[in-house]
Image (cartoon, rainbow, N blue to C red; front, side, top):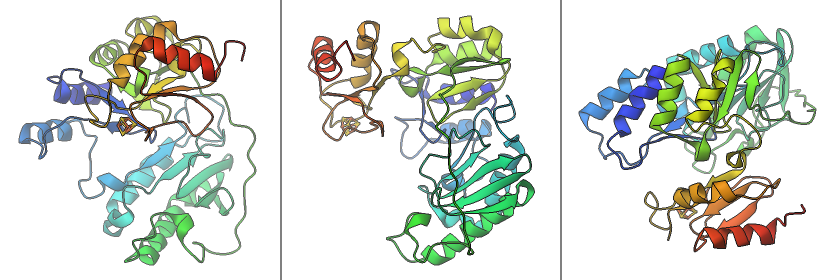
Length: 339
Ligand code: SF4
């Protein structure tokens, strides 16, 4: 996406006390605290970014793809044209607007970085020009030329829409019985997941965004060094041709190296965005970051026992701490310094 689009979104939230654009685990962007209904000015400003090309299909354009595909040589192919074709074909089919906002497409160029997401329909590149199209998980797939993948994925999506119509208990492909698609199907075996990229990747850069909140100073720094970024599902951005710009991006508060506390410190929304919370979880996390002890597990600060946004893996649970000192003591209990 163009960095100018991020600047346009930042203009929309500029008047808020703590303006930010939230990066989601589906590699999407979220603006919070907007008036309901939206004012005409906000609607026009969002439309002007070009990020909402289809009003009817906006909720179903949930496509996560290997963020570095085509930018390095770790994948089997460049998936960028496939992603564009899938998005265009999805938006061109009126019936697919019924897929619903929870439906997820995942396209992995063979490096194994995103295919472990819980997806409805997926693609995994197995060799240059070949792939497996997958439905509802890793155990149900069909080999296909890469050129045939989009039509096959869309025909499975149409089958899902027609078979789930009127059944409010079915939200996902894996909930259909009998299973979707033609027989026979095959499974994929994955190697271990690659490490999440951070810092320099060839001529490009990957920068993490503390708490997944992109702030005005981040966007201003990005504007100075690139005109294109790719949003990852890991609350980070790929900065195309940005390797040389890592120092100014780091100076603006973006994370460029694995030693940063922000690679493992997370927080739920908390106050003021969530009234169930007794504290401003993000402010506490910002206070906590400089003194976060070394460790291996993610640390998640929650404002209440719902624990929104906790990682799927083991993590340090900091629940409604009374202070930064209280949070540090909880961390020491759950992840002693010798771990
Ligand atoms: S964990 Fe509780 S306080 Fe935090 S966002 Fe969820 S509901 Fe709100």
